[in-house]
Image (cartoon, rainbow, N blue to C red; front, side):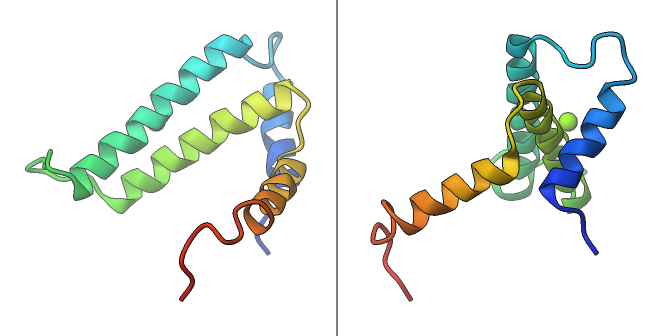
Length: 106
Ligand SMILES: [Mg+2]
């Protein structure tokens, strides 16, 4: 069975708590998240955009970069004592509530 986001947050925290300073400062983590977001954009651009590379990047690279981005988001959430499961529930409330009629349905 796949892990829940709560378990994943705990995995990251168990790893981070081995260190004297478990997480970077909040602004450094935001900078790191932004870097990783750029790396996702780079892979997508090479896969689908106008900026093609000869030795093209792969879906494996995209998976890795999404994993890196997720990790940085989890670090921010853990450091700020935010439950991503709860954040997800709040997001669902928004998309099924406020934004429910925003997009054309099938
Ligand atoms: Mg990366």
